[in-house]
Amino acid sequence: MKISTSLIRAVIIIILLIIVISDFFYIKYLEKKMNNITILTSEEDSMLAVKVSSFKEPVVVFTADFIDKFYHYSSPFKDGMDFNELIKKYIRNRWSDHYGCVRGTRERKRIHEGIDLFVSENTPVYPLTNFGIVTEVSDNPHYLVQVQYKKPNGIIDSMKIEYGKTIRILYPEGIESIYTHLNEVFVELNQAVDRNTVVGLTGLTGNIRNSGKPSHLHLELRDSENRSFDPRNRLRFEQNSAANFIKHINIGEE
Ligand SMILES: [Zn+2]
Image 1 (cartoon, rainbow, N blue to C red):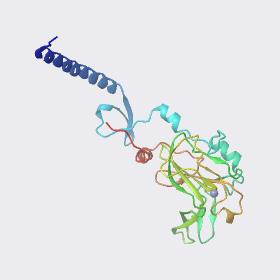
Image 2: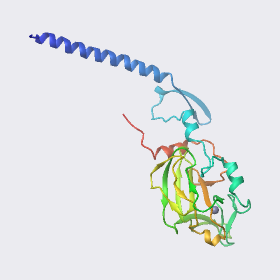
Image 3: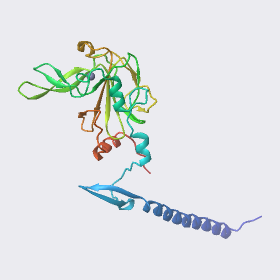
Image 4: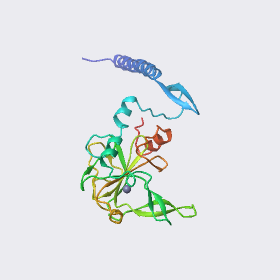
């Protein structure tokens, strides 16, 4: 059977028309969907409710579901404890194991920038939330980390402290945890980890032997400016911290 060229032409035109018309309605449908999204944000001190279409810059929105799943911090051990329970159970002496205790000598006074959690040697350690990225790792038992100290005249200077085998993990909020004195590290730089990843084993590396203390996990929390803070004080959500996190992940682009 012979099909005329004009019939083929007509069929192609009809198909193209169908594609153009359905695309048009699909775009309308997507626009309607986008316009149903309102984002709460802030400008200086006031809260703004904005439609997606009015943003000129790329915007990343964390849904409540995402925050529930990935922002909840808990114990680095597989015991399901929150931070308060953790401190109660594993801190031996509140005058020497807490954040902020004075360390060093009269010439080089510094503060303890983490908490010391006394668990048995070779206890597996996990990330603090359900998603993280390894931002620093050292398998060197004499690994040195730069810390600040105060001279007797009040001047702040920095020195190196032997942290031993160390892992640093960045969480979606922009907060990082540092685990030190580990016997083993099982992760690599830039590796994505979740709550089921055994990142290392607690141990006795670093300056622990000068401290006279038995094996423990030294746990530090740092904000997006690399300032340590007391794990008992959870930070409020910071836009900068989220931006710091986003720098480390690949966001798919069309
Ligand atoms: Zn410590």
